[in-house]
Each structure stands twice: as structure tokens, then as C-alpha cells.
Length: 351
Image (cartoon, rainbow, N blue to C red; front, side, top):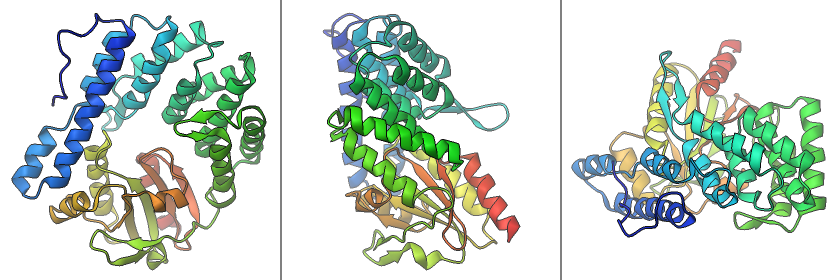
């Protein structure tokens, strides 16, 4: 699979210009591919389109060829943050049949370079948010180090926000909740007006407080009311009495095909039990209808191309899964994967 190629006239490898070219090339290709996806109508067109999807792996490896040998230079921080966001979506199947990060060593090298060369850099805001997107223990440890040692109060505040955001995945232990609340207060005090991805730290911190109060493990998930891709009314509460996986997703994500396959297998595994998979799709209506007609997506979906339902759940990182019991109590929030299935199976076994 190929994305729009770089021209021979680009600057030599290892420069900011080439890093920008790799990013723009991939993003333009994805935009063009998404436009074609909305227009595909026949199975043949959809099959051809799937094979022509821009390769996230290829884009990540091209970016790595530009920045991999230059990570001690401060200009690499922004493209390295972009690389982390893309690389975290890439996986390969390990010998145990489970997905493994495809570029784990390269991602580790980025974190090590930040630790060794850039802990005091004033350009760490994009990197902090990329570490949140990774959401793993090494990223959390690096955010803690930035928060503890950076000379800028604003950067410390952004790192504190990142620590609180990753804390979503650490459960509802009182110690974790106390730290999250402490980090959110610090973020608001020290970095309220810092802009992050088109919004402010204060706004993101308010969203995190809402999540703690309403969308954490043990809370009853708010009802969702919307429509499906055909315009028919849907409610999350229609599935009360069943164990529900509520999945916020879209097919344009690099992990989209793997996610669809994971959902298909989950539906098969729990087919004879009181279980339902309910999607909230950010895809345009035509794309969602096409996927459903082709039976690739054989589960109910809210149509949410404008992200209004996702906003109610304060979804920042896609895809995001909630596991709800029969009374809609939240038992899990986080990435789609084996933990989702384990949680569903445990709830069903408990009756």
C-alpha cells in the first residue's frame, strides 16, 4: 500500500523540511483516500479501496529514516511526536497470537532521546500529548520526569495534565484518583492558557474532571441518544440488561481493519449470551452504510460524524472502549483488545 510519494527535489534526509514533507504527504494521501471511501458503492470498489489504503507503517518508517539519526536535535521533537502517534497504532501478530507493537524499539528510542537530550526543552508540548496517546508505562514515567524537573511552570503543567489523562487507564484506586486530581489542579494553576491541539489545558482539565465524576469505573454510564446510519433513533439504554461494549471508532484509523476483525470475533464468541457490541462511528454516513451493507460491520452503530456523542463521553483518543454491565455500570475504559474480552467474560460468568 502506497501513499503519495516524495519527490526527488526534497531536501536531504535528516532535515526539518523532509520531516514536514513526510507528514504532509501521508496526511494528504489519507484525506484523498477518505474522500474516495465515501464514494465507493460496489464490493469491487470497496475491495480495491481497501488495498489502496495509505500505509501508516510506510509513513512511520519514512519519518524514522528522517529523524532516527537526529534525535539529539531539538527540531526533531515535533516530528517525533507525530511519529509516536502513528507508530502506536501499528502492530504485528506475535507467536502467541496477540498483537505486538510493530515499532517498539523506535518508540523507546524517541523516549530515551527526550530523557537524555530534551528534558528542559521549551518545545515539549506536542511530545507530552504524544506520550499521552501512547498511554503506556514508559510514557507515564517520562511525563513524571518532565513534570518533576522542567524549568518552565507551563510545561510542568502540561505534563501534569498528561499524567492525569493516562491515569484513566490505571483504575479507580483512591491513590490513583488523588494523584489525578492533584495533577489536574496543577495543570490548571500552571498552564491553563496553554494551547494543546486546538484547545486549552484548562478545557482539557475540565473534561478530565467530568470523566472522573461521571465516566470512571464504577459509575453508571450516561445514556446516549442518537440515530443510526439510516436515521433511525437509537439509545444506549435500549441494551440495558445486556453486557455492552460501547466502542468509539472510525474506519479511517490505521488500526481500522484490525479493529473490525477484533469486533467480528468478539461478536462470534459471545453470540449466545446477553451481550451486545454498540459502536459510535465517526465515519461519514455513506461510509458507515457501505461497511454495514457489506456485512463487515455487523453490529449496531450510532452515526456520529460530527462527534457530538463522542463529546458527551469526552473521547480524546480513538478508538476507545467502555465495558458496561447489565445496569450500565462501567467496568473498563481503555483501548480495544484482550482486556475488553476478559472483562466481558468475567461479567457474564458472574451472572
